[in-house]
Image (cartoon, rainbow, N blue to C red; front, side, top):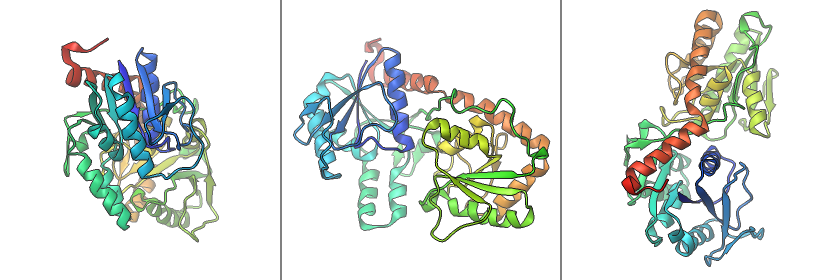
Length: 366
């Protein structure tokens, strides 16, 4: 199958990694896959073996990107629209993947190409939480994108009927389980002198970093064994603690090492519970004890669930998992088993099967 994936930029976000890995698996299974990207974007942060079509705002396609700086908003959208009009008809499937890419995909004439929209989050909610005038406009544009005449595939059942979003098929994100795997001989906090709590530091309030910091402050006063290890930093201005360490992973391999270095990973996001969240999935896959407000993969059997924006509950669940070694080991084992369903090969095959079943039917080209 010939698949075109239009993107605004090659970003460093989890959503961009998903697209690169899906494209890689589709290429490996014999499909012709290309990214269509404005030529002002950086080169891919997450490696891809798919072809890259760099396009300018006139719709001119090049094999090499133009490093000259250009406007980031209107230019990107205009370039995608022009590029889709120029080459879209050469493809069998065009996959929109972010609310702003959905508009040029829906509006551009692309011959007989089928069009789908992979919704990786309810983006309107994130824009609204930022509350600037620009973000409120983007929230409206995002919300309206879910009404466009595109086949919608979401990444979790929670989005089947989420606000104004409607869908009937889902494909979760995947992981490289050869990278995100547990230590051969995992640490057990029953016999360690320190207990390391981890979190992914994020500035966005909905990611909940502040609740981890406040919980740790309490725990450090109650038990001298506790330490905090924050990936990527992004701590509130002025916050510091003598038992807090910041590490900055520079690759997936280093990120997996980070997860394996912590005993407990706390992920207290405040919105879209039930959706995929990479810190939860990756921590489960690497054998950390997971404390979370509730994201895909985290259940009563695999994690310690906490109330939203509730520091005291985080404290109590961490104390509970430290005390009960048998329950801790059982949940960690269940989490490792759950993570096996999220291989890139499995999730890419699931999405391809949805394309064939819902868009191509008996006419699908193998």
